[in-house]
Length: 260
Ligand SMILES: Nc1ncnc2c1ncn2[C@@H]1O[C@H](COP(=O)(O)OP(=O)(O)O)[C@@H](O)[C@H]1O
Ligand SMILES: CC(=O)N[C@@H](CCC(=O)OP(=O)(O)O)C(=O)O
Image: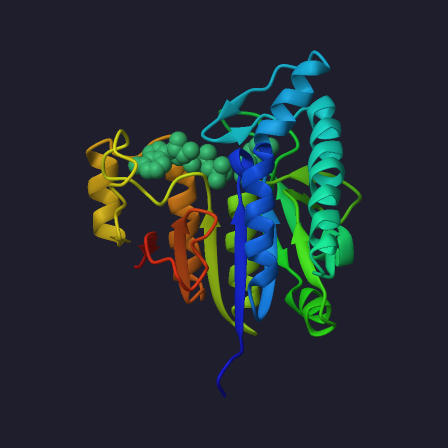
């Protein structure tokens, strides 16, 4: 039987920080037809709020070292400030959005990352997605809006990278839906030459990725983002793209498509 389509859109911290970009994105998202889920980050806001509270943020391999104090900050910022503002803005655009952490409806369970060379603190590696519960919301015509928080099932919230949340929700939901993930950020796609914002690489497969890595063309958050893209494709997600906030509209075809 042919599966229905589901679009999972992820927006990152730079868009969330720019009110005009966020408003423009949410308008486009509200016009997107069919089943959809929004996943948002907010790392930049967490860093700035933490700093106002005198808490220094530390990232290793694109992941935030999350001690007990930082966990409080990210819970307030991702689960509260950012998530509820996005939900309210979507409601104003007639999207019946419902904001969630992974603890809500037990949607995303994770394990606290084991301590090896680095102790990441309260960072969770996703273990299980409760696809059928998320699907109940979709079937009831709600639009789920996930923040970057998961839980361990024993009462502990955990901080989980938003790109990983998007890819693992994608993997879970691909059992039910023909699933596409769109990673939206402030650029038009993955760039061949970072100083030329128009040098979008149209397609990245496993081999291209290895070459880009070898030649130092990609760095920072783009490396874990691409790892998440390949993980999603290897585990059932049909399509994965990286591009700007208008990438999922019909008029736009200037973005990066990831294939195996
Ligand atoms: N070749 C590249 N093309 C595009 N972005 C790149 C590239 N190499 C590194 N980056 C960086 O990756 C960042 C995107 O990753 P990240 O900050 O994790 O995104 P997000 O805000 O969506 O979570 C971009 O802001 C950019 O600075
Ligand atoms: C464990 C971990 O690093 N979690 C991320 C979650 C937020 C996020 O991913 O935000 P962006 O998409 O805006 O980068 C963090 O706290 O920064």
